[in-house]
Image (tube, rainbow, N blue to C red; front, top):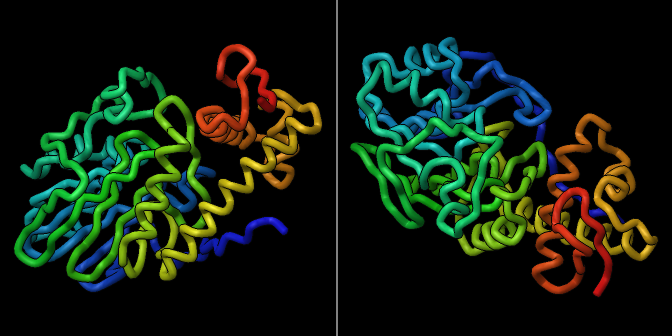
Length: 300
């Protein structure tokens, strides 16, 4: 029986409105809905007085003005960025035209891979450079809030979650979402790192997850365990395809994603490639030639 992920997609909201979603937490949702963002980017505001803004979102002046209106009379002291996809970090530049707050992130796009000598050239906000680079375990704080940085590479190599310590809430960016699994797209996306980051969350005691897209996840460990099981299931599907003499990714995708619209197949193919890279690294699959979307893959 296929893994059942407890998806959560229902969300009542108004674009541009500031809503209190948890004690000390407000959210403003940008009007950038898509198959990859659900209803749009949720920008979170932490605290009162001196506040932190998480993921200002796309380069959309209308959305940034809505965020500024939500904190009218307050000071933005920190701008936190989970990662550098175009629906998360480009809004920082516009926001900083109206405040003096520095940006905090693991690093620029591809930072986690660049450290390994891997070049990342696509799919991200190449203009973003954090004012302050943060690492796993770092603490950021102001008058009535404190945040722990939780490094969770996988979806991107610079992905960082932020834990609000006062209420054990984890802002998960795109690492764990309630409405969908994350796309893992090499070379910046890395399935081994993603799985390790999921297992890391199982060791924590967060009470709820607030992703950048979609509703809250109130039973986080159940959700994470389902995600891990789902990725293992995808690996089994790949091995089954090979056993049926289907050796390339573009032929695997329609078999593995029969219930997925065809316009999503290119993104699905990237995730299959990431899974195959992980299987190759573990010695369960062999690449006949280049390890890429056009490669041929067999059992050892």
